[in-house]
Image (cartoon, rainbow, N blue to C red; front, top):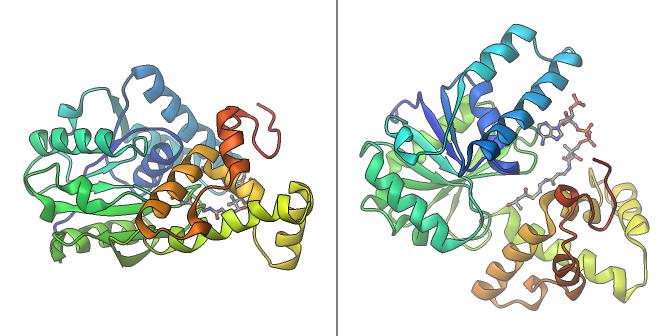
Length: 286
Ligand code: 3HC
Protein backbone atom coordinates (compact mmCIF):
# COMPACT_ATOMS: atom_id res chain seq x y z
CA UNK A 1 0.00 0.00 0.00
CA UNK A 2 1.47 3.35 -1.06
CA UNK A 3 1.47 6.34 1.26
CA UNK A 4 -2.08 7.53 1.81
CA UNK A 5 -2.90 10.87 0.26
CA UNK A 6 -5.14 13.15 2.25
CA UNK A 7 -4.29 16.73 1.41
CA UNK A 8 -3.73 17.83 -2.18
CA UNK A 9 -2.23 20.97 -3.68
CA UNK A 10 -2.94 22.12 -7.24
CA UNK A 11 -0.58 24.70 -8.73
CA UNK A 12 -2.28 26.70 -11.48
CA UNK A 13 -6.07 27.03 -11.63
CA UNK A 14 -6.52 27.54 -15.37
CA UNK A 15 -8.71 25.18 -17.41
CA UNK A 16 -6.85 22.03 -16.41
CA UNK A 17 -5.92 23.04 -12.86
CA UNK A 18 -9.48 24.07 -11.98
CA UNK A 19 -10.75 20.77 -13.38
CA UNK A 20 -8.17 18.81 -11.37
CA UNK A 21 -9.00 20.73 -8.18
CA UNK A 22 -12.68 19.93 -8.84
CA UNK A 23 -11.88 16.21 -9.12
CA UNK A 24 -9.89 16.42 -5.89
CA UNK A 25 -12.50 18.20 -3.75
CA UNK A 26 -15.27 15.97 -5.12
CA UNK A 27 -13.19 12.96 -4.09
CA UNK A 28 -13.19 14.30 -0.52
CA UNK A 29 -9.66 15.74 -0.31
CA UNK A 30 -8.78 18.99 1.41
CA UNK A 31 -7.34 20.85 -1.56
CA UNK A 32 -5.29 24.01 -1.80
CA UNK A 33 -5.34 25.80 -5.14
CA UNK A 34 -2.40 28.04 -5.97
CA UNK A 35 -2.42 30.87 -8.48
CA UNK A 36 -0.17 33.86 -9.11
CA UNK A 37 -2.93 36.28 -8.08
CA UNK A 38 -6.02 35.97 -5.91
CA UNK A 39 -8.11 37.18 -8.84
CA UNK A 40 -6.99 34.20 -10.97
CA UNK A 41 -7.47 31.86 -8.02
CA UNK A 42 -11.03 33.15 -7.51
CA UNK A 43 -11.68 32.67 -11.22
CA UNK A 44 -10.64 29.02 -10.86
CA UNK A 45 -12.97 28.60 -7.88
CA UNK A 46 -15.80 30.24 -9.84
CA UNK A 47 -15.31 27.70 -12.67
CA UNK A 48 -15.57 24.83 -10.19
CA UNK A 49 -18.62 26.41 -8.57
CA UNK A 50 -20.25 26.80 -12.00
CA UNK A 51 -19.89 23.11 -12.93
CA UNK A 52 -20.92 21.87 -9.49
CA UNK A 53 -23.99 24.13 -9.59
CA UNK A 54 -24.88 22.65 -12.99
CA UNK A 55 -24.55 19.17 -11.52
CA UNK A 56 -26.92 20.15 -8.67
CA UNK A 57 -29.40 21.65 -11.15
CA UNK A 58 -29.34 18.43 -13.18
CA UNK A 59 -30.00 16.38 -10.03
CA UNK A 60 -26.63 14.58 -10.21
CA UNK A 61 -25.24 16.14 -7.03
CA UNK A 62 -26.91 17.02 -3.73
CA UNK A 63 -26.64 20.68 -2.70
CA UNK A 64 -25.04 19.61 0.62
CA UNK A 65 -22.36 17.61 -1.26
CA UNK A 66 -21.66 20.59 -3.50
CA UNK A 67 -21.30 22.88 -0.48
CA UNK A 68 -19.00 20.38 1.24
CA UNK A 69 -16.87 20.03 -1.91
CA UNK A 70 -16.45 23.80 -2.32
CA UNK A 71 -15.64 24.14 1.38
CA UNK A 72 -12.70 21.72 0.92
CA UNK A 73 -11.03 24.17 -1.48
CA UNK A 74 -8.80 26.92 -0.13
CA UNK A 75 -6.87 29.37 -2.26
CA UNK A 76 -3.39 30.79 -1.96
CA UNK A 77 -0.77 32.74 -3.86
CA UNK A 78 2.07 31.30 -1.73
CA UNK A 79 3.64 27.95 -2.63
CA UNK A 80 4.80 27.73 1.00
CA UNK A 81 1.14 27.15 1.96
CA UNK A 82 1.38 23.72 0.27
CA UNK A 83 3.85 22.59 2.97
CA UNK A 84 1.62 19.88 4.45
CA UNK A 85 0.19 18.48 1.21
CA UNK A 86 0.70 14.76 0.55
CA UNK A 87 0.35 15.26 -3.20
CA UNK A 88 0.89 18.39 -5.29
CA UNK A 89 -0.22 18.46 -8.93
CA UNK A 90 1.30 21.18 -11.07
CA UNK A 91 -0.82 22.51 -13.96
CA UNK A 92 0.90 25.77 -14.93
CA UNK A 93 1.72 26.88 -18.49
CA UNK A 94 3.56 24.37 -20.69
CA UNK A 95 6.94 26.07 -20.32
CA UNK A 96 9.80 23.92 -19.08
CA UNK A 97 11.74 26.69 -17.25
CA UNK A 98 8.55 27.77 -15.44
CA UNK A 99 7.67 24.20 -14.45
CA UNK A 100 11.22 23.60 -13.24
CA UNK A 101 11.05 26.76 -11.14
CA UNK A 102 7.76 25.58 -9.56
CA UNK A 103 9.21 22.12 -8.82
CA UNK A 104 12.40 23.54 -7.30
CA UNK A 105 10.24 25.64 -4.96
CA UNK A 106 7.88 22.75 -4.18
CA UNK A 107 10.93 20.65 -3.35
CA UNK A 108 12.00 23.29 -0.80
CA UNK A 109 8.60 23.76 0.86
CA UNK A 110 6.91 20.33 0.92
CA UNK A 111 7.59 17.32 3.15
CA UNK A 112 10.20 14.92 1.69
CA UNK A 113 7.61 12.09 1.37
CA UNK A 114 5.13 14.23 -0.59
CA UNK A 115 4.47 13.14 -4.17
CA UNK A 116 5.07 15.93 -6.69
CA UNK A 117 3.21 15.47 -9.97
CA UNK A 118 3.08 17.35 -13.25
CA UNK A 119 0.08 17.47 -15.56
CA UNK A 120 2.33 18.21 -18.54
CA UNK A 121 0.92 17.20 -21.95
CA UNK A 122 4.15 16.72 -23.83
CA UNK A 123 7.19 17.81 -21.81
CA UNK A 124 9.56 15.30 -20.24
CA UNK A 125 8.67 14.43 -16.64
CA UNK A 126 12.34 13.56 -16.00
CA UNK A 127 13.49 17.03 -17.09
CA UNK A 128 10.96 18.60 -14.71
CA UNK A 129 11.92 16.19 -11.89
CA UNK A 130 15.59 17.08 -12.33
CA UNK A 131 14.84 20.50 -10.82
CA UNK A 132 14.29 18.74 -7.47
CA UNK A 133 16.52 16.83 -5.04
CA UNK A 134 13.95 14.01 -4.98
CA UNK A 135 13.23 12.84 -8.53
CA UNK A 136 12.06 9.53 -7.03
CA UNK A 137 8.98 11.33 -5.64
CA UNK A 138 8.11 12.96 -9.00
CA UNK A 139 5.62 11.46 -11.48
CA UNK A 140 3.26 12.64 -14.21
CA UNK A 141 -0.48 12.70 -13.56
CA UNK A 142 -1.90 13.64 -16.94
CA UNK A 143 -5.60 14.53 -17.13
CA UNK A 144 -7.72 15.03 -20.25
CA UNK A 145 -9.84 18.07 -20.97
CA UNK A 146 -12.44 18.44 -19.46
CA UNK A 147 -10.72 16.85 -16.45
CA UNK A 148 -13.87 16.35 -14.33
CA UNK A 149 -15.63 14.59 -17.22
CA UNK A 150 -13.06 12.40 -18.98
CA UNK A 151 -12.22 9.25 -16.99
CA UNK A 152 -8.66 8.70 -18.23
CA UNK A 153 -5.61 9.73 -16.21
CA UNK A 154 -2.14 8.74 -17.45
CA UNK A 155 0.20 7.93 -14.56
CA UNK A 156 3.64 8.64 -15.97
CA UNK A 157 6.71 6.89 -14.59
CA UNK A 158 9.99 8.72 -15.23
CA UNK A 159 13.24 6.72 -15.03
CA UNK A 160 13.85 7.77 -11.42
CA UNK A 161 10.22 7.65 -10.16
CA UNK A 162 9.87 5.22 -7.24
CA UNK A 163 7.34 2.39 -7.24
CA UNK A 164 5.78 3.95 -4.15
CA UNK A 165 5.24 7.37 -5.76
CA UNK A 166 3.77 5.79 -8.91
CA UNK A 167 1.47 3.60 -6.83
CA UNK A 168 0.37 6.52 -4.63
CA UNK A 169 -0.54 8.55 -7.72
CA UNK A 170 -2.38 5.61 -9.30
CA UNK A 171 -4.34 4.86 -6.13
CA UNK A 172 -5.22 8.53 -5.67
CA UNK A 173 -6.58 8.75 -9.23
CA UNK A 174 -8.52 5.53 -8.82
CA UNK A 175 -9.91 6.72 -5.49
CA UNK A 176 -11.08 9.89 -7.24
CA UNK A 177 -13.18 7.76 -9.60
CA UNK A 178 -10.80 7.98 -12.56
CA UNK A 179 -9.52 5.24 -14.87
CA UNK A 180 -5.72 5.50 -14.47
CA UNK A 181 -3.30 3.78 -16.84
CA UNK A 182 0.42 3.28 -16.31
CA UNK A 183 2.79 4.64 -18.91
CA UNK A 184 6.37 5.75 -19.33
CA UNK A 185 7.98 9.13 -19.79
CA UNK A 186 8.02 8.89 -23.59
CA UNK A 187 7.02 11.81 -25.86
CA UNK A 188 3.24 12.35 -25.72
CA UNK A 189 2.87 9.38 -23.34
CA UNK A 190 0.02 7.28 -24.83
CA UNK A 191 -2.89 9.43 -25.98
CA UNK A 192 -1.10 12.56 -27.19
CA UNK A 193 1.47 10.46 -29.10
CA UNK A 194 -1.45 9.26 -31.20
CA UNK A 195 -3.99 12.09 -30.98
CA UNK A 196 -1.75 15.05 -31.80
CA UNK A 197 -0.48 13.85 -35.19
CA UNK A 198 -3.99 12.60 -35.95
CA UNK A 199 -5.51 16.02 -35.22
CA UNK A 200 -2.77 17.63 -37.33
CA UNK A 201 -3.76 15.32 -40.21
CA UNK A 202 -7.37 16.42 -39.76
CA UNK A 203 -6.38 20.11 -39.92
CA UNK A 204 -4.25 19.51 -43.03
CA UNK A 205 -7.22 17.84 -44.73
CA UNK A 206 -9.12 21.15 -44.47
CA UNK A 207 -6.76 22.76 -46.98
CA UNK A 208 -5.66 19.69 -48.96
CA UNK A 209 -9.21 18.54 -49.63
CA UNK A 210 -10.84 22.01 -49.42
CA UNK A 211 -13.48 21.05 -46.86
CA UNK A 212 -14.94 23.37 -44.25
CA UNK A 213 -14.38 22.85 -40.49
CA UNK A 214 -18.14 22.28 -40.19
CA UNK A 215 -18.08 19.47 -42.78
CA UNK A 216 -14.89 17.92 -41.40
CA UNK A 217 -16.42 17.79 -37.91
CA UNK A 218 -19.70 16.46 -39.26
CA UNK A 219 -17.76 13.78 -41.14
CA UNK A 220 -15.73 12.61 -38.14
CA UNK A 221 -18.62 12.63 -35.65
CA UNK A 222 -21.05 10.88 -37.99
CA UNK A 223 -18.62 8.71 -39.91
CA UNK A 224 -16.05 7.75 -37.30
CA UNK A 225 -18.09 8.04 -34.11
CA UNK A 226 -15.95 10.77 -32.55
CA UNK A 227 -17.78 12.42 -29.61
CA UNK A 228 -16.85 15.80 -31.04
CA UNK A 229 -15.25 16.83 -34.32
CA UNK A 230 -11.49 17.47 -34.63
CA UNK A 231 -11.88 21.24 -35.08
CA UNK A 232 -14.17 21.51 -32.04
CA UNK A 233 -11.68 19.38 -30.10
CA UNK A 234 -8.67 21.55 -30.97
CA UNK A 235 -10.78 24.59 -29.98
CA UNK A 236 -11.55 22.88 -26.64
CA UNK A 237 -7.93 21.91 -25.94
CA UNK A 238 -6.72 25.39 -27.02
CA UNK A 239 -4.88 26.15 -30.26
CA UNK A 240 -1.81 27.29 -28.29
CA UNK A 241 -1.74 24.16 -26.11
CA UNK A 242 -2.11 21.94 -29.18
CA UNK A 243 0.59 23.82 -31.12
CA UNK A 244 2.95 23.59 -28.18
CA UNK A 245 2.39 19.86 -27.77
CA UNK A 246 2.87 19.37 -31.54
CA UNK A 247 6.16 21.26 -31.46
CA UNK A 248 7.37 19.29 -28.44
CA UNK A 249 6.57 15.97 -30.14
CA UNK A 250 8.09 17.12 -33.43
CA UNK A 251 11.28 18.21 -31.67
CA UNK A 252 11.62 14.83 -29.97
CA UNK A 253 10.42 12.41 -32.65
CA UNK A 254 11.00 14.38 -35.85
CA UNK A 255 7.96 13.04 -37.75
CA UNK A 256 6.55 15.59 -40.19
CA UNK A 257 2.96 14.84 -39.14
CA UNK A 258 3.81 16.10 -35.67
CA UNK A 259 4.78 19.61 -36.80
CA UNK A 260 1.88 22.03 -36.28
CA UNK A 261 0.07 22.80 -39.57
CA UNK A 262 0.43 26.36 -40.89
CA UNK A 263 -3.29 26.93 -40.43
CA UNK A 264 -2.96 26.41 -36.65
CA UNK A 265 0.08 28.68 -36.45
CA UNK A 266 -1.96 31.35 -38.24
CA UNK A 267 -4.85 31.02 -35.78
CA UNK A 268 -2.37 31.27 -32.93
CA UNK A 269 -0.77 34.44 -34.38
CA UNK A 270 -4.25 35.96 -34.68
CA UNK A 271 -4.97 35.19 -31.02
CA UNK A 272 -7.79 32.85 -32.04
CA UNK A 273 -6.99 30.24 -29.41
CA UNK A 274 -10.31 28.39 -29.36
CA UNK A 275 -13.03 28.37 -26.74
CA UNK A 276 -11.01 30.25 -24.16
CA UNK A 277 -10.76 33.36 -26.37
CA UNK A 278 -14.24 32.93 -27.86
CA UNK A 279 -12.79 32.38 -31.36
CA UNK A 280 -10.95 29.52 -33.03
CA UNK A 281 -12.17 27.35 -35.89
CA UNK A 282 -15.60 28.29 -34.58
CA UNK A 283 -17.09 31.26 -32.71
CA UNK A 284 -18.24 30.86 -29.10
CA UNK A 285 -20.64 33.06 -27.16
CA UNK A 286 -19.57 34.29 -23.70
N1 3HC B 1 -15.73 20.86 -16.21
C1 3HC B 1 -16.69 20.15 -15.63
N2 3HC B 1 -17.74 19.64 -16.28
C2 3HC B 1 -17.82 19.87 -17.60
C3 3HC B 1 -16.85 20.60 -18.28
C4 3HC B 1 -15.77 21.10 -17.53
N3 3HC B 1 -14.79 21.82 -18.08
N4 3HC B 1 -17.21 20.66 -19.58
C5 3HC B 1 -18.35 19.98 -19.71
N5 3HC B 1 -18.71 19.50 -18.52
C6 3HC B 1 -19.87 18.67 -18.22
C7 3HC B 1 -21.11 19.42 -18.51
O1 3HC B 1 -21.56 20.11 -17.36
C8 3HC B 1 -22.07 18.33 -18.94
O2 3HC B 1 -22.78 17.82 -17.87
P1 3HC B 1 -24.36 17.98 -17.93
O3 3HC B 1 -24.81 17.30 -19.20
O4 3HC B 1 -24.79 17.31 -16.70
O5 3HC B 1 -24.60 19.46 -17.96
C9 3HC B 1 -21.18 17.20 -19.43
O6 3HC B 1 -19.86 17.56 -19.10
C10 3HC B 1 -21.30 17.00 -20.89
O7 3HC B 1 -21.07 18.26 -21.51
P2 3HC B 1 -21.96 18.82 -22.70
O8 3HC B 1 -23.40 18.50 -22.49
O9 3HC B 1 -21.56 20.25 -22.90
O10 3HC B 1 -21.47 18.12 -24.00
P3 3HC B 1 -21.28 16.65 -24.52
O11 3HC B 1 -22.21 15.67 -23.98
O12 3HC B 1 -21.22 16.87 -25.96
O13 3HC B 1 -19.83 16.23 -23.99
C11 3HC B 1 -17.46 16.35 -23.99
C12 3HC B 1 -18.75 17.11 -24.06
C13 3HC B 1 -17.36 15.61 -22.66
C14 3HC B 1 -16.35 17.40 -24.08
C15 3HC B 1 -17.40 15.29 -25.15
O14 3HC B 1 -17.72 15.93 -26.37
C16 3HC B 1 -16.04 14.65 -25.29
O15 3HC B 1 -15.73 13.71 -24.59
N6 3HC B 1 -15.24 15.16 -26.23
C17 3HC B 1 -13.87 14.67 -26.46
C18 3HC B 1 -12.94 15.40 -25.53
C19 3HC B 1 -11.54 14.91 -25.69
O16 3HC B 1 -11.18 14.12 -26.53
N7 3HC B 1 -10.69 15.43 -24.80
C20 3HC B 1 -9.29 15.06 -24.79
C21 3HC B 1 -8.51 16.16 -25.40
S1 3HC B 1 -6.80 15.81 -25.40
C22 3HC B 1 -6.25 16.38 -23.93
O17 3HC B 1 -6.96 16.95 -23.13
C23 3HC B 1 -4.82 16.15 -23.63
C24 3HC B 1 -4.08 17.43 -23.41
O18 3HC B 1 -2.79 17.08 -22.97
C25 3HC B 1 -3.95 18.27 -24.67
